[in-house]
Amino acid sequence: MRKKRIVIALGHNALGTTLPKQQEAAKRTASAVAEFIAQDYQVAITHSNGPQVGMIHTAMAQLAQQFPEYTKAPMSVCSAMSQGYIGYDLQSAIRSELYGRGIVKAVSTILTQVVVDPYDEAFYRPTKLIGRILTEEEADAEEKNGNHVARVEGGFRRVVATPKPEDIVEIDAIKALLDADQVVIACGGGGIPVLMQGNRMKGASAVIEKDTAAGRLAELIEADMLIILTGVEKVCLNFGTPEEKPLDYLSIADAKRYMDEGQFEEGTMKPKIAAAIDFIGDSAVRKVLITKLDPKGIALNGVSGTMIGRSVSTYALRN
Image (cartoon, rainbow, N blue to C red; front, side, top):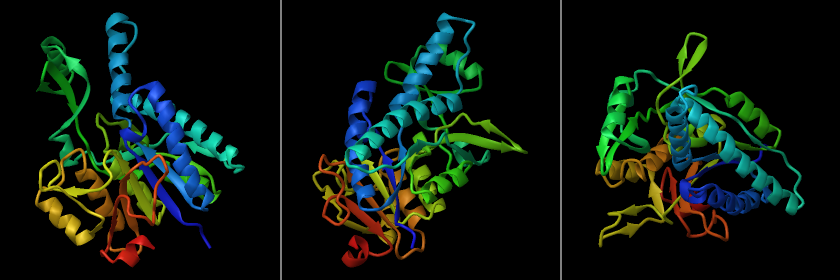
């Protein structure tokens, strides 16, 4: 019988925002991942890359300004760089944690490309702020190059689209590694967005939401559960108000209703709920846990976090 599979999506709170903080955060994450492996789960891991890809994009842009012989790196290349160095820290930390527990298991990072639709509405209405604050002159130069910018406090910032993930190019390799009972780190930062052009792929000037990519990955590998780690312990209604109400359980029907009511913010909780809805679909057994990474790990059968399923039956969701 096939082992149960889970996808763990790490938010930036589970990774840190600087290299030293990321290395420390990777150790804490490794402990939680090792607990699942010790319980005989097959684990695939995705992660955010917001601060990291912004840092890389800024560094490459400034390098090109100071040294004309260097060229700016497109977003797809910056995303690939971030996958590499975040994956390196994660796989090193997880491998060390596993070996410390006497578990000998390979951990691999897959440089992952994710196919997006060139006609996705997101390309017509880009909303994702990236990179450093630009001067007006720099913003004009970006627009002349065909990029979008938005005015923010202190200047301007570049804006890119956030299209939905259609397919994962390396999905067969990911499945093969999981079938071999290895730990896989894939779709980092939502994956490298690419457009299919005949038998070629071209990097897209976009960023895929990490949570929607995690949901697509979970669906394609037929995972039993998706765990989304974020900065809050539970999904809340009326978040940040005196009427704030944390939710222990959430049905798909209620999740859709609350989304329509505007309960969940764009770029924060909304993509997580959308990923949960898409992943669970009509399944009566798939589950999604949205929670905060606790120093003691992740409780699948406790009260921490919000469990989402087809219904709100306590037995169905917690077992």
